[in-house]
Image (cartoon, rainbow, N blue to C red; front, side):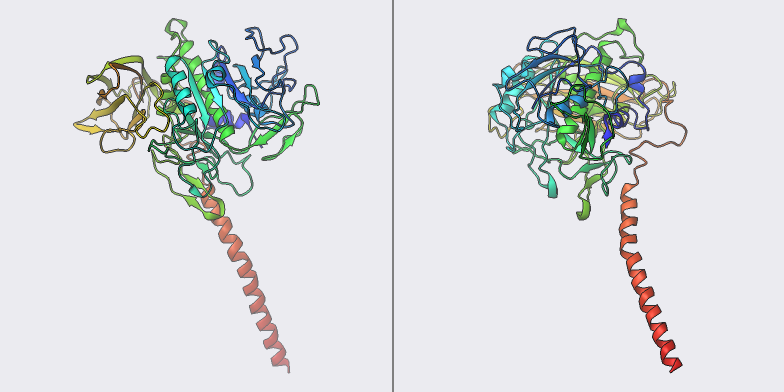
Length: 545
Protein backbone atom coordinates (compact mmCIF):
# COMPACT_ATOMS: atom_id res chain seq x y z
CA UNK A 1 0.00 0.00 0.00
CA UNK A 2 1.08 3.57 -0.47
CA UNK A 3 2.21 4.88 2.85
CA UNK A 4 1.75 8.51 3.77
CA UNK A 5 5.50 8.55 3.06
CA UNK A 6 4.72 8.34 -0.64
CA UNK A 7 2.12 11.08 -0.38
CA UNK A 8 4.64 13.35 1.39
CA UNK A 9 7.25 13.25 -1.38
CA UNK A 10 4.64 13.30 -4.16
CA UNK A 11 3.32 16.54 -2.64
CA UNK A 12 6.67 18.09 -1.62
CA UNK A 13 9.13 17.30 -4.41
CA UNK A 14 7.59 14.82 -6.90
CA UNK A 15 10.93 12.94 -6.66
CA UNK A 16 11.24 9.57 -4.92
CA UNK A 17 11.96 10.01 -1.20
CA UNK A 18 12.84 13.72 -1.50
CA UNK A 19 11.11 15.75 1.22
CA UNK A 20 12.70 19.21 1.10
CA UNK A 21 10.11 20.78 3.42
CA UNK A 22 10.72 18.20 6.16
CA UNK A 23 14.46 18.69 5.62
CA UNK A 24 14.24 22.35 6.74
CA UNK A 25 11.76 21.67 9.57
CA UNK A 26 8.52 22.50 7.75
CA UNK A 27 6.43 19.60 9.06
CA UNK A 28 3.37 21.34 10.54
CA UNK A 29 5.00 22.18 13.88
CA UNK A 30 3.11 24.90 15.73
CA UNK A 31 -0.08 24.18 13.77
CA UNK A 32 -3.30 22.53 14.88
CA UNK A 33 -5.68 20.85 12.44
CA UNK A 34 -9.22 19.95 13.45
CA UNK A 35 -10.76 16.76 12.06
CA UNK A 36 -14.40 15.73 12.28
CA UNK A 37 -14.86 12.00 11.74
CA UNK A 38 -15.84 8.64 13.26
CA UNK A 39 -13.24 8.67 16.04
CA UNK A 40 -9.56 8.04 16.76
CA UNK A 41 -8.11 4.93 18.36
CA UNK A 42 -6.03 6.98 20.77
CA UNK A 43 -3.88 3.97 21.73
CA UNK A 44 -2.58 3.48 18.19
CA UNK A 45 1.17 4.24 18.16
CA UNK A 46 0.66 7.18 15.78
CA UNK A 47 -1.35 9.07 18.45
CA UNK A 48 -0.33 7.48 21.76
CA UNK A 49 0.40 9.91 24.60
CA UNK A 50 0.59 8.32 28.04
CA UNK A 51 1.37 11.61 29.81
CA UNK A 52 -1.41 13.78 28.35
CA UNK A 53 -4.49 11.71 27.51
CA UNK A 54 -6.85 13.69 25.29
CA UNK A 55 -9.91 15.39 26.73
CA UNK A 56 -12.61 17.81 25.61
CA UNK A 57 -10.48 20.73 26.84
CA UNK A 58 -7.62 21.83 24.59
CA UNK A 59 -4.25 20.86 26.12
CA UNK A 60 -1.22 22.65 24.67
CA UNK A 61 1.10 20.04 26.26
CA UNK A 62 -0.33 17.12 24.30
CA UNK A 63 2.01 15.23 21.99
CA UNK A 64 -0.58 14.69 19.26
CA UNK A 65 -4.29 14.90 20.17
CA UNK A 66 -4.65 18.27 21.90
CA UNK A 67 -8.45 18.07 22.11
CA UNK A 68 -11.02 15.30 21.68
CA UNK A 69 -14.66 16.35 21.78
CA UNK A 70 -16.91 13.28 22.12
CA UNK A 71 -20.08 14.36 20.33
CA UNK A 72 -20.81 10.62 19.98
CA UNK A 73 -18.13 8.58 21.80
CA UNK A 74 -14.41 8.52 22.58
CA UNK A 75 -12.99 5.93 20.20
CA UNK A 76 -13.14 4.47 16.70
CA UNK A 77 -14.36 1.11 15.38
CA UNK A 78 -12.10 -1.68 14.05
CA UNK A 79 -10.03 -0.22 11.18
CA UNK A 80 -12.22 2.85 11.29
CA UNK A 81 -12.38 5.82 8.94
CA UNK A 82 -11.46 8.52 11.45
CA UNK A 83 -8.22 6.96 12.70
CA UNK A 84 -7.02 6.61 9.10
CA UNK A 85 -7.89 10.22 8.19
CA UNK A 86 -6.27 11.60 11.37
CA UNK A 87 -3.10 9.60 10.73
CA UNK A 88 -2.84 11.05 7.23
CA UNK A 89 -2.99 14.65 8.51
CA UNK A 90 -0.55 14.41 11.40
CA UNK A 91 0.07 10.86 12.64
CA UNK A 92 3.55 10.38 14.12
CA UNK A 93 5.23 7.48 15.85
CA UNK A 94 6.90 8.71 19.01
CA UNK A 95 9.73 6.18 18.95
CA UNK A 96 10.78 5.98 15.31
CA UNK A 97 9.99 6.96 11.75
CA UNK A 98 6.72 5.24 10.96
CA UNK A 99 5.52 3.76 7.68
CA UNK A 100 2.41 5.89 8.10
CA UNK A 101 3.75 9.17 9.51
CA UNK A 102 1.45 11.92 8.28
CA UNK A 103 1.67 14.79 5.81
CA UNK A 104 2.27 17.25 8.68
CA UNK A 105 3.67 14.98 11.42
CA UNK A 106 4.72 17.95 13.54
CA UNK A 107 1.15 19.29 13.81
CA UNK A 108 -1.32 18.65 16.61
CA UNK A 109 -4.88 17.48 16.20
CA UNK A 110 -8.18 18.65 17.60
CA UNK A 111 -10.85 16.02 17.01
CA UNK A 112 -14.63 16.09 16.81
CA UNK A 113 -15.95 12.53 17.24
CA UNK A 114 -19.16 12.45 15.21
CA UNK A 115 -19.38 8.72 14.40
CA UNK A 116 -20.63 5.60 16.17
CA UNK A 117 -19.30 2.03 16.11
CA UNK A 118 -21.25 1.30 12.91
CA UNK A 119 -19.47 4.16 11.15
CA UNK A 120 -22.58 6.33 10.76
CA UNK A 121 -22.38 10.03 11.58
CA UNK A 122 -24.37 12.11 14.07
CA UNK A 123 -23.58 15.81 13.65
CA UNK A 124 -23.89 18.60 16.21
CA UNK A 125 -24.88 22.04 14.95
CA UNK A 126 -22.40 23.43 12.44
CA UNK A 127 -21.13 26.29 14.59
CA UNK A 128 -20.42 23.94 17.50
CA UNK A 129 -18.67 21.49 15.17
CA UNK A 130 -16.44 24.11 13.51
CA UNK A 131 -15.53 25.68 16.87
CA UNK A 132 -13.66 22.54 17.98
CA UNK A 133 -9.97 23.40 18.33
CA UNK A 134 -10.50 27.15 18.05
CA UNK A 135 -8.73 29.51 18.44
CA UNK A 136 -5.62 27.27 18.17
CA UNK A 137 -6.84 25.42 15.11
CA UNK A 138 -6.83 27.30 11.78
CA UNK A 139 -7.74 24.35 9.54
CA UNK A 140 -10.69 21.94 9.57
CA UNK A 141 -10.60 18.71 7.53
CA UNK A 142 -13.99 17.08 6.86
CA UNK A 143 -13.88 13.72 5.04
CA UNK A 144 -17.64 13.36 4.85
CA UNK A 145 -20.63 14.97 3.17
CA UNK A 146 -23.96 14.47 1.42
CA UNK A 147 -24.95 13.79 -2.19
CA UNK A 148 -26.83 17.09 -2.59
CA UNK A 149 -25.08 19.08 -5.39
CA UNK A 150 -26.69 22.38 -4.47
CA UNK A 151 -25.90 25.13 -1.98
CA UNK A 152 -27.46 23.96 1.30
CA UNK A 153 -27.91 25.44 4.76
CA UNK A 154 -24.77 23.57 5.79
CA UNK A 155 -22.83 25.02 2.81
CA UNK A 156 -23.91 28.47 3.96
CA UNK A 157 -22.96 27.78 7.60
CA UNK A 158 -19.49 26.56 6.63
CA UNK A 159 -18.98 29.63 4.41
CA UNK A 160 -20.26 31.96 7.11
CA UNK A 161 -17.93 30.47 9.72
CA UNK A 162 -14.93 31.11 7.45
CA UNK A 163 -16.16 34.65 6.82
CA UNK A 164 -16.49 35.37 10.56
CA UNK A 165 -13.12 33.70 11.32
CA UNK A 166 -10.90 34.96 8.54
CA UNK A 167 -7.82 32.98 9.67
CA UNK A 168 -9.71 29.71 9.19
CA UNK A 169 -9.78 27.30 6.24
CA UNK A 170 -12.16 24.36 5.79
CA UNK A 171 -11.38 21.48 3.43
CA UNK A 172 -14.15 19.04 2.49
CA UNK A 173 -14.08 15.74 0.57
CA UNK A 174 -15.69 16.17 -2.84
CA UNK A 175 -17.31 12.73 -2.70
CA UNK A 176 -16.89 9.29 -4.28
CA UNK A 177 -19.79 9.30 -6.75
CA UNK A 178 -17.91 10.18 -9.96
CA UNK A 179 -17.87 6.72 -11.57
CA UNK A 180 -18.85 6.81 -15.22
CA UNK A 181 -17.83 10.51 -15.30
CA UNK A 182 -21.09 11.38 -13.56
CA UNK A 183 -21.56 15.19 -13.41
CA UNK A 184 -22.98 17.15 -10.45
CA UNK A 185 -21.83 14.55 -7.94
CA UNK A 186 -19.96 16.89 -5.55
CA UNK A 187 -22.20 17.08 -2.48
CA UNK A 188 -22.78 19.60 0.31
CA UNK A 189 -20.94 20.95 2.26
CA UNK A 190 -18.27 20.64 -0.48
CA UNK A 191 -20.57 22.88 -2.56
CA UNK A 192 -19.59 25.88 -0.44
CA UNK A 193 -17.88 28.95 -1.94
CA UNK A 194 -15.19 29.63 0.66
CA UNK A 195 -14.24 26.05 1.49
CA UNK A 196 -11.92 23.86 -0.59
CA UNK A 197 -13.53 20.78 -2.16
CA UNK A 198 -10.91 18.05 -2.65
CA UNK A 199 -10.93 15.33 -5.32
CA UNK A 200 -8.60 12.31 -5.58
CA UNK A 201 -5.79 11.29 -7.94
CA UNK A 202 -3.81 8.06 -8.11
CA UNK A 203 -0.60 7.11 -6.38
CA UNK A 204 2.83 5.88 -7.48
CA UNK A 205 4.14 2.68 -9.06
CA UNK A 206 5.09 1.10 -5.76
CA UNK A 207 1.62 1.26 -4.36
CA UNK A 208 -1.16 1.54 -6.86
CA UNK A 209 -3.64 -1.32 -7.15
CA UNK A 210 -3.01 -3.82 -9.94
CA UNK A 211 -4.01 -2.35 -13.31
CA UNK A 212 -4.45 1.24 -12.06
CA UNK A 213 -2.68 4.09 -13.84
CA UNK A 214 -0.07 6.32 -12.20
CA UNK A 215 -0.26 9.53 -10.17
CA UNK A 216 -1.10 11.88 -13.05
CA UNK A 217 -4.57 10.34 -13.38
CA UNK A 218 -7.74 11.14 -11.45
CA UNK A 219 -9.46 8.26 -9.65
CA UNK A 220 -12.68 7.21 -11.40
CA UNK A 221 -14.69 7.53 -8.18
CA UNK A 222 -13.69 11.16 -7.56
CA UNK A 223 -16.87 13.28 -7.68
CA UNK A 224 -17.35 15.91 -10.40
CA UNK A 225 -18.94 19.32 -10.58
CA UNK A 226 -20.49 21.64 -11.33
CA UNK A 227 -22.65 22.68 -8.41
CA UNK A 228 -26.32 23.18 -9.27
CA UNK A 229 -25.71 26.95 -9.57
CA UNK A 230 -22.86 26.38 -12.07
CA UNK A 231 -19.72 26.87 -9.96
CA UNK A 232 -16.75 24.67 -10.90
CA UNK A 233 -15.90 21.83 -8.50
CA UNK A 234 -13.87 20.20 -7.10
CA UNK A 235 -11.33 22.94 -6.33
CA UNK A 236 -8.15 20.86 -6.13
CA UNK A 237 -7.06 17.22 -6.33
CA UNK A 238 -4.65 15.31 -4.09
CA UNK A 239 -3.46 11.75 -3.51
CA UNK A 240 -6.42 9.56 -2.61
CA UNK A 241 -5.81 6.06 -3.96
CA UNK A 242 -4.39 3.23 -1.82
CA UNK A 243 -3.24 5.56 0.97
CA UNK A 244 -1.65 3.74 3.91
CA UNK A 245 -2.24 5.31 7.31
CA UNK A 246 -2.94 4.44 10.93
CA UNK A 247 -5.34 1.54 11.47
CA UNK A 248 -7.63 1.35 14.50
CA UNK A 249 -7.56 -1.83 16.60
CA UNK A 250 -9.50 -0.76 19.71
CA UNK A 251 -8.92 -4.09 21.49
CA UNK A 252 -5.12 -3.60 21.43
CA UNK A 253 -2.83 -1.07 23.10
CA UNK A 254 -0.04 0.51 21.08
CA UNK A 255 -0.73 -1.35 17.82
CA UNK A 256 1.78 -0.17 15.25
CA UNK A 257 3.76 -1.06 12.12
CA UNK A 258 4.11 -4.68 11.14
CA UNK A 259 3.71 -6.21 7.74
CA UNK A 260 2.84 -3.42 5.28
CA UNK A 261 -0.64 -4.21 3.92
CA UNK A 262 -1.45 -4.10 0.21
CA UNK A 263 -3.91 -1.63 -1.35
CA UNK A 264 -7.25 -1.47 0.50
CA UNK A 265 -6.25 -3.97 3.18
CA UNK A 266 -5.04 -3.90 6.79
CA UNK A 267 -2.33 -5.34 9.04
CA UNK A 268 -1.60 -4.56 12.68
CA UNK A 269 -1.88 -0.81 13.31
CA UNK A 270 -1.90 0.02 9.59
CA UNK A 271 -4.74 0.41 7.08
CA UNK A 272 -4.83 1.19 3.35
CA UNK A 273 -7.92 2.97 1.98
CA UNK A 274 -8.98 4.96 -1.07
CA UNK A 275 -11.40 7.85 -1.55
CA UNK A 276 -11.64 11.62 -1.54
CA UNK A 277 -11.79 11.07 2.24
CA UNK A 278 -8.11 10.11 1.98
CA UNK A 279 -7.23 12.98 -0.39
CA UNK A 280 -8.73 15.68 1.88
CA UNK A 281 -6.37 15.14 4.85
CA UNK A 282 -3.41 15.15 2.41
CA UNK A 283 -4.48 18.64 1.32
CA UNK A 284 -5.21 19.71 4.91
CA UNK A 285 -1.76 18.60 6.10
CA UNK A 286 -0.21 20.50 3.19
CA UNK A 287 -2.20 23.60 4.23
CA UNK A 288 -0.67 23.28 7.73
CA UNK A 289 2.84 23.26 6.23
CA UNK A 290 2.01 26.40 4.19
CA UNK A 291 0.75 28.18 7.32
CA UNK A 292 3.93 27.25 9.17
CA UNK A 293 5.97 28.51 6.20
CA UNK A 294 4.47 32.01 6.56
CA UNK A 295 4.38 32.09 10.35
CA UNK A 296 8.05 31.10 10.67
CA UNK A 297 9.24 33.73 8.20
CA UNK A 298 10.19 31.66 5.14
CA UNK A 299 8.47 34.25 2.97
CA UNK A 300 9.76 36.07 0.97
CA UNK A 301 13.35 34.73 0.87
CA UNK A 302 12.61 31.00 0.95
CA UNK A 303 14.77 30.65 4.07
CA UNK A 304 13.69 30.83 7.71
CA UNK A 305 13.96 34.34 9.11
CA UNK A 306 11.97 35.07 12.29
CA UNK A 307 11.98 38.80 11.49
CA UNK A 308 9.88 37.99 8.39
CA UNK A 309 7.28 36.05 10.40
CA UNK A 310 3.74 36.68 9.20
CA UNK A 311 1.23 36.97 12.00
CA UNK A 312 -1.84 34.77 11.49
CA UNK A 313 -2.19 34.51 7.67
CA UNK A 314 -5.75 34.43 6.40
CA UNK A 315 -7.59 31.32 5.29
CA UNK A 316 -8.02 33.00 1.90
CA UNK A 317 -4.23 33.27 1.55
CA UNK A 318 -3.62 29.58 2.31
CA UNK A 319 -6.39 28.62 -0.14
CA UNK A 320 -4.91 30.91 -2.80
CA UNK A 321 -1.42 29.41 -2.37
CA UNK A 322 -2.77 25.85 -2.75
CA UNK A 323 -4.81 26.78 -5.83
CA UNK A 324 -2.13 28.93 -7.45
CA UNK A 325 0.45 26.14 -7.38
CA UNK A 326 -1.89 23.33 -8.41
CA UNK A 327 -0.77 21.46 -11.54
CA UNK A 328 -2.83 19.86 -14.28
CA UNK A 329 -3.41 16.13 -14.51
CA UNK A 330 -3.56 13.87 -17.59
CA UNK A 331 -7.01 12.29 -17.51
CA UNK A 332 -9.49 10.19 -15.53
CA UNK A 333 -8.64 6.50 -15.19
CA UNK A 334 -11.89 4.68 -15.91
CA UNK A 335 -10.23 1.26 -16.04
CA UNK A 336 -11.65 -0.97 -18.77
CA UNK A 337 -13.66 1.99 -20.11
CA UNK A 338 -10.44 3.83 -20.91
CA UNK A 339 -9.12 7.29 -20.08
CA UNK A 340 -11.45 10.30 -20.06
CA UNK A 341 -9.70 13.39 -21.49
CA UNK A 342 -9.72 16.41 -19.19
CA UNK A 343 -8.84 20.08 -19.51
CA UNK A 344 -7.77 22.91 -17.19
CA UNK A 345 -10.59 24.39 -15.07
CA UNK A 346 -13.07 21.65 -15.98
CA UNK A 347 -15.29 19.82 -13.49
CA UNK A 348 -12.91 16.87 -13.26
CA UNK A 349 -9.81 18.66 -11.96
CA UNK A 350 -10.51 22.42 -11.93
CA UNK A 351 -7.18 23.96 -10.78
CA UNK A 352 -5.40 20.58 -10.62
CA UNK A 353 -3.32 18.62 -8.12
CA UNK A 354 -1.71 19.97 -4.95
CA UNK A 355 2.01 20.67 -5.46
CA UNK A 356 4.29 22.43 -2.99
CA UNK A 357 6.97 22.52 -5.73
CA UNK A 358 4.94 25.13 -7.59
CA UNK A 359 3.24 26.81 -4.60
CA UNK A 360 5.96 28.44 -2.49
CA UNK A 361 9.61 29.43 -2.68
CA UNK A 362 11.98 27.19 -0.72
CA UNK A 363 15.46 28.44 -1.60
CA UNK A 364 17.09 26.08 -4.10
CA UNK A 365 14.46 23.40 -3.48
CA UNK A 366 11.30 24.46 -5.35
CA UNK A 367 10.53 25.67 -8.87
CA UNK A 368 9.05 29.11 -8.18
CA UNK A 369 9.50 32.47 -6.49
CA UNK A 370 6.50 33.85 -4.60
CA UNK A 371 4.77 37.18 -3.99
CA UNK A 372 1.67 37.45 -1.80
CA UNK A 373 -0.74 40.20 -0.77
CA UNK A 374 -2.94 39.23 2.19
CA UNK A 375 -6.07 40.87 3.57
CA UNK A 376 -6.17 43.44 0.79
CA UNK A 377 -9.38 45.47 0.69
CA UNK A 378 -11.23 47.00 -2.25
CA UNK A 379 -14.28 49.27 -2.52
CA UNK A 380 -17.21 48.53 -4.82
CA UNK A 381 -16.43 49.81 -8.32
CA UNK A 382 -12.71 50.32 -7.68
CA UNK A 383 -9.75 48.48 -9.17
CA UNK A 384 -6.21 47.86 -7.90
CA UNK A 385 -3.08 47.17 -9.94
CA UNK A 386 -0.03 45.14 -8.90
CA UNK A 387 3.12 45.04 -11.01
CA UNK A 388 5.57 42.14 -11.06
CA UNK A 389 8.74 41.81 -13.14
CA UNK A 390 10.15 38.50 -14.35
CA UNK A 391 13.78 38.17 -13.24
CA UNK A 392 15.74 35.00 -14.01
CA UNK A 393 19.17 36.43 -13.10
CA UNK A 394 19.44 34.32 -9.93
CA UNK A 395 19.00 31.06 -11.81
CA UNK A 396 15.23 30.53 -11.41
CA UNK A 397 14.10 28.73 -14.57
CA UNK A 398 10.30 28.56 -14.17
CA UNK A 399 8.83 29.52 -17.57
CA UNK A 400 5.37 30.69 -16.43
CA UNK A 401 3.63 33.42 -14.46
CA UNK A 402 0.70 32.37 -12.30
CA UNK A 403 -1.61 34.72 -10.35
CA UNK A 404 -4.54 33.69 -8.14
CA UNK A 405 -7.24 35.78 -6.48
CA UNK A 406 -9.32 34.34 -3.61
CA UNK A 407 -11.89 36.09 -1.49
CA UNK A 408 -14.01 34.86 1.40
CA UNK A 409 -17.51 36.29 1.63
CA UNK A 410 -20.69 35.82 3.64
CA UNK A 411 -22.74 32.68 3.28
CA UNK A 412 -25.44 32.88 0.61
CA UNK A 413 -29.11 31.93 0.68
CA UNK A 414 -29.55 28.13 0.53
CA UNK A 415 -30.68 27.09 -2.95
CA UNK A 416 -29.10 30.22 -4.50
CA UNK A 417 -28.72 30.28 -8.28
CA UNK A 418 -26.13 33.10 -8.25
CA UNK A 419 -24.28 32.24 -5.07
CA UNK A 420 -21.29 34.61 -5.33
CA UNK A 421 -22.45 37.95 -3.94
CA UNK A 422 -19.30 40.07 -4.14
CA UNK A 423 -17.91 39.65 -7.64
CA UNK A 424 -14.23 40.50 -7.97
CA UNK A 425 -12.44 40.12 -11.30
CA UNK A 426 -8.82 39.13 -11.93
CA UNK A 427 -6.96 39.95 -15.14
CA UNK A 428 -3.29 40.13 -16.11
CA UNK A 429 -1.82 42.36 -18.83
CA UNK A 430 1.50 41.49 -20.45
CA UNK A 431 3.04 42.85 -23.67
CA UNK A 432 -0.26 44.43 -24.72
CA UNK A 433 -2.35 41.29 -24.19
CA UNK A 434 -4.94 40.95 -21.40
CA UNK A 435 -5.39 37.45 -19.94
CA UNK A 436 -8.60 36.42 -18.18
CA UNK A 437 -8.97 33.78 -15.44
CA UNK A 438 -10.03 30.15 -15.31
CA UNK A 439 -9.52 29.49 -19.02
CA UNK A 440 -12.11 32.10 -20.06
CA UNK A 441 -12.08 34.78 -22.71
CA UNK A 442 -13.61 37.31 -20.32
CA UNK A 443 -14.33 37.83 -16.62
CA UNK A 444 -15.51 34.92 -14.44
CA UNK A 445 -18.86 35.92 -12.95
CA UNK A 446 -19.52 32.59 -11.18
CA UNK A 447 -16.56 31.50 -9.02
CA UNK A 448 -14.83 33.12 -6.02
CA UNK A 449 -11.36 31.77 -6.85
CA UNK A 450 -9.72 32.96 -10.08
CA UNK A 451 -6.37 32.07 -11.62
CA UNK A 452 -4.44 33.30 -14.66
CA UNK A 453 -1.46 31.28 -15.96
CA UNK A 454 0.71 32.80 -18.71
CA UNK A 455 3.10 30.36 -20.38
CA UNK A 456 6.52 31.26 -21.74
CA UNK A 457 7.20 34.59 -20.04
CA UNK A 458 10.61 36.21 -20.67
CA UNK A 459 13.25 37.73 -18.40
CA UNK A 460 12.44 41.42 -17.93
CA UNK A 461 8.72 41.07 -18.71
CA UNK A 462 6.56 43.38 -16.59
CA UNK A 463 3.05 42.10 -15.89
CA UNK A 464 0.22 44.21 -14.49
CA UNK A 465 -2.20 42.24 -12.33
CA UNK A 466 -5.57 43.93 -11.89
CA UNK A 467 -8.22 43.21 -9.27
CA UNK A 468 -11.53 44.87 -10.10
CA UNK A 469 -14.51 45.10 -7.71
CA UNK A 470 -17.11 44.61 -10.44
CA UNK A 471 -20.24 44.22 -8.34
CA UNK A 472 -20.27 44.02 -4.53
CA UNK A 473 -23.30 43.40 -2.35
CA UNK A 474 -21.58 45.51 0.33
CA UNK A 475 -19.24 48.48 0.41
CA UNK A 476 -15.93 46.60 0.37
CA UNK A 477 -14.42 43.13 0.11
CA UNK A 478 -11.17 41.65 1.45
CA UNK A 479 -9.10 39.29 -0.67
CA UNK A 480 -5.76 37.48 -1.00
CA UNK A 481 -3.60 37.66 -4.13
CA UNK A 482 -0.80 35.15 -4.78
CA UNK A 483 1.72 35.31 -7.64
CA UNK A 484 4.41 32.81 -8.66
CA UNK A 485 7.10 33.09 -11.33
CA UNK A 486 10.80 33.98 -11.41
CA UNK A 487 11.43 37.11 -9.33
CA UNK A 488 15.20 36.88 -8.81
CA UNK A 489 15.38 33.59 -6.92
CA UNK A 490 17.77 30.68 -7.32
CA UNK A 491 17.60 27.55 -9.44
CA UNK A 492 15.96 24.40 -8.08
CA UNK A 493 18.87 22.15 -7.06
CA UNK A 494 16.71 19.11 -6.28
CA UNK A 495 16.50 18.00 -9.89
CA UNK A 496 19.50 16.68 -11.80
CA UNK A 497 19.79 17.91 -15.38
CA UNK A 498 17.17 16.23 -17.54
CA UNK A 499 15.48 14.56 -14.56
CA UNK A 500 11.68 14.52 -14.69
CA UNK A 501 9.17 14.47 -11.87
CA UNK A 502 7.04 11.46 -10.95
CA UNK A 503 4.17 13.10 -12.83
CA UNK A 504 6.14 14.06 -15.94
CA UNK A 505 7.63 10.54 -16.07
CA UNK A 506 4.25 8.84 -15.68
CA UNK A 507 4.04 6.50 -18.68
CA UNK A 508 1.52 4.14 -17.10
CA UNK A 509 -1.05 4.72 -19.87
CA UNK A 510 1.33 3.52 -22.59
CA UNK A 511 2.29 0.52 -20.41
CA UNK A 512 -1.38 -0.36 -20.03
CA UNK A 513 -1.91 -0.09 -23.80
CA UNK A 514 1.11 -2.35 -24.37
CA UNK A 515 -0.19 -4.88 -21.83
CA UNK A 516 -3.65 -4.88 -23.44
CA UNK A 517 -2.10 -5.43 -26.88
CA UNK A 518 0.05 -8.25 -25.49
CA UNK A 519 -3.01 -9.79 -23.84
CA UNK A 520 -4.82 -9.73 -27.20
CA UNK A 521 -2.05 -10.68 -29.60
CA UNK A 522 -0.10 -13.28 -27.60
CA UNK A 523 -3.13 -15.65 -27.34
CA UNK A 524 -3.95 -14.94 -31.01
CA UNK A 525 -0.37 -15.79 -31.89
CA UNK A 526 -0.55 -19.03 -29.91
CA UNK A 527 -3.85 -19.96 -31.63
CA UNK A 528 -2.36 -19.10 -35.02
CA UNK A 529 0.74 -21.22 -34.31
CA UNK A 530 -1.48 -24.10 -33.23
CA UNK A 531 -3.56 -23.78 -36.42
CA UNK A 532 -0.49 -23.60 -38.66
CA UNK A 533 1.18 -26.43 -36.78
CA UNK A 534 -1.97 -28.55 -37.03
CA UNK A 535 -2.21 -27.88 -40.77
CA UNK A 536 1.44 -28.90 -41.28
CA UNK A 537 0.94 -32.10 -39.29
CA UNK A 538 -2.20 -32.99 -41.30
CA UNK A 539 -0.38 -32.25 -44.53
CA UNK A 540 2.51 -34.53 -43.52
CA UNK A 541 0.07 -37.29 -42.61
CA UNK A 542 -1.65 -36.92 -45.99
CA UNK A 543 1.71 -37.00 -47.76
CA UNK A 544 2.78 -40.13 -45.87
CA UNK A 545 -0.36 -41.94 -46.97
